[in-house]
Length: 269
Image (cartoon, rainbow, N blue to C red; front, side, top):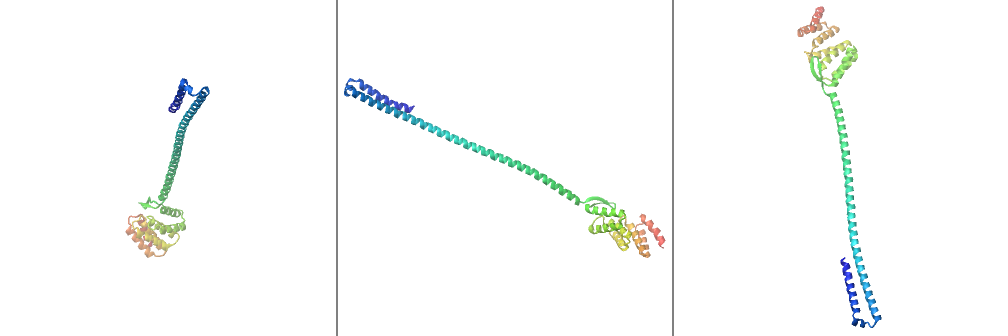
């Protein structure tokens, strides 16, 4: 509106001057008649129109300038809003990807823990197969490996089935494979008996003697001595058989086998 007032004020002033000039008799005479007055009026009117046109142009230019400024501001604001929306969308996408990665990581971790649990369980099962287990051997509570217990039980099952050939092989293998086992003294005793049943007298006697050397306090030590005397009788060594029976009675006088030894000794004399 500032430009409007500035534009119209010179035009109004000019019109006032013209009217004042025309209304004055002395000034009207200067034009020399009606024709000159009309030309002066037309000239002033033309100038007035030019001034008005210039004023309108100035107003329109000012409005256009204001509109352009407003349009530029709006465009800049719109661009800023679009850029901000793009940033928000990117952040949403990154957040979604991060949450997805966390979920996948959590699933992978859970699966890993389950696999680890399965592996540990399998390892524990395998270790249990090799961990010593408590058992009673010849009246003693001892710890033995599951493998040696299984081998001993298998050999003794063959002996109880009176399969003395297979029992001999199994017991010989057991003594070789488990030479430090708590089952060895008992295995030697039954191995000697299997060999005696198979008429392998010398190896039979050797294993009975090994048992006595290893464990003279073994619950079957007296029976081992009686078995040695039986081998000696089979070998026709009666003198050695009598000596063995005498040693049995002397060493294990309270054993039930000692009574059998006395009866057999009386028959050998």
